[in-house]
Length: 150
Length: 150
Image (cartoon, rainbow over all chains, first blue to last red; front, side, top):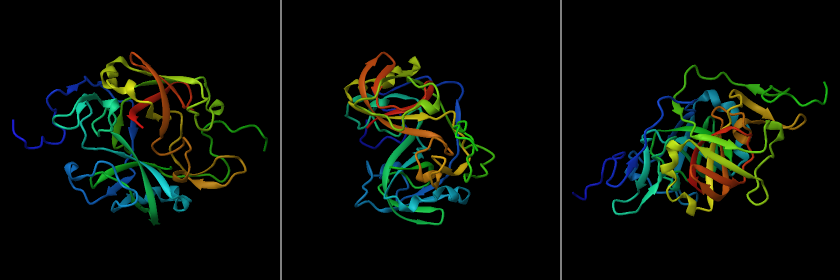
């Protein structure tokens, strides 16, 4: 065994999987994409920083612009996004090679049955259908699912 | 115009809708159902109370039980659930008949393009694949999507 990092999504020693259902129950629209400085999952920070993190852009499809009425007055938003590169069948996981194995629901890992992330961000400004925020930690190109007042 | 409440999901005067996309982008599994005392949306409180609210049950499909390893040690969980009775095309909304019209993303309304709710709850105990919690405000039978440490 080498010290090279495992590829994103590989099952690590000690991790377990679950048999997933044969059909899905509901469907999502991607409302736009999140633009961040990180192109690979291994580059992302663990947790965003609303004060010192870099500015990130949430670029909505213009179709959804009318839903932003009144959002510019908010200082904090809850952003829900889809961790589109995550495997969905991990029952127990290890966050570090030598760390303990824990159940998926006891972790904030991106690998989960419905890979939806929730991040509270600082809203800096709204530019048309784009929001400029601070506090995200996801990979560039991540699909956005929802925005709510925090 | 009468004072009778509009049916859940009706478009109120002044509200606007958006043309939704023709196809979806991702799919979800319902991991189980939430059991609460409220059978209709109009009966639900606005916001759950983690100290004085009633005990509610999150009944997971037994398939997902292995993902709960280590969860019983947590005191607070973030629960994501699917507001399955919500319409998804409202651009601006009015929360009360005489209230202001605001953009959907400036509101925590259940009516949104991807009707995913996020509630932080107090975990009381885990009984097999069921979690007993306090702090939910959703209708009985609501599908659960995810559980994370808060």
